[in-house]
Amino acid sequence: MDAPSAAPPPPPPDEAVAALRQLAPAARLRWRAGGVLAGFVVALLAGGALVPLSLAGAVPGTVLWVLPALVALVGGLGWWHAGARYRRFGYRLDERVLHVRDGVLTHSDAHVPLFRVQHVDLTRGPLQLLFGLTTLVVHTAAPAADVQLPDVLVVDAEDLRDRILDAAHEAAAALGTADVDAV
Image (tube, rainbow, N blue to C red):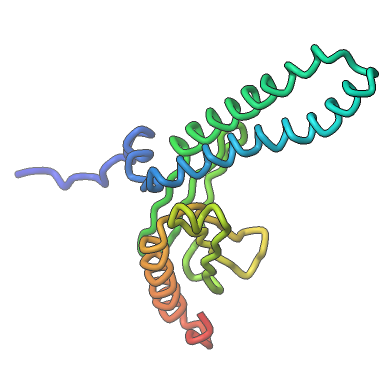
């Protein structure tokens, strides 16, 4: 007769990472566009200072080669950071917890118990409108514990919002919260 089996061991870290859902490739593209745009903004700001100084003779004109180098440097760093963040970012929603992992230089792993969810917002900026993305913000009773899922496809975000709110409602009802309709 077989001995009763113990609970399975937790998955190795690589499997746990694989269990997280990645964002759509449009998110990586939007992040990269933002990084390159930041390079141009830095170059414009530097050019706003260097060009008049060069015309006035206070700075040699040869210094203006710095502008394309700034665009390349900041844009390249933005491009790299976007790809690294895209590979690192992941989320998972189960029946009790929303897990969100993010960060390139500073890593964060957030676990939001669904019974603590107060409300869920969807917000969209100009670049997000262009790429068909939105940011899903999960608000809890403690503002420091709020979680954001940036650049989720709109259809996915609406479905995720509904699933989070349904699960939060069920969790609050299971806990016997006085006002489950407030969720």
